[in-house]
Image (cartoon, helix red, strand yellow):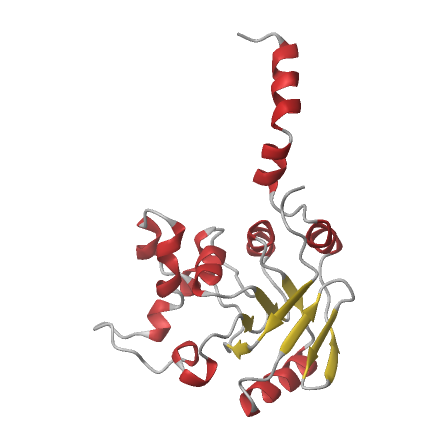
Length: 198
């Protein structure tokens, strides 16, 4: 496969508090009419970040101390609600390369996986410790080790979990189904020709 394998994600984190954060909160419906997914990044969590006059509410994502954070941390049932692919697209286009939560909605998890954005699960107590660490030092380095299912931050090592099929896909670089189709183009064309349809 030409898709790059993903074994480790490193960077800094930011905690967005809340259980049952749904896809409409992640990316409000009015932004779905964009021409390309690239336009979605600035609209991430728009209605909780800005008021009706587009003035910042001082949301944690807009805090200078968390500027450039690429690992999103949240709580239970993240990404629930409608199955819009725009939600993980907005997260990725905003600059996040991994998500840590207690649990994820199934379709959201799948959409993130095909984008190459690992979603790892972490128990509440450990996640609280992680959140305390990054609140104390927003520049604290976080390493998400998908291969060994560990998360390292400020000399602390935490256990994380991930659906085994998704983990295998990241480690083997086979998480992008479109890439798999392109790689198999000749075999697909050969099979199509053998079917004899005009």
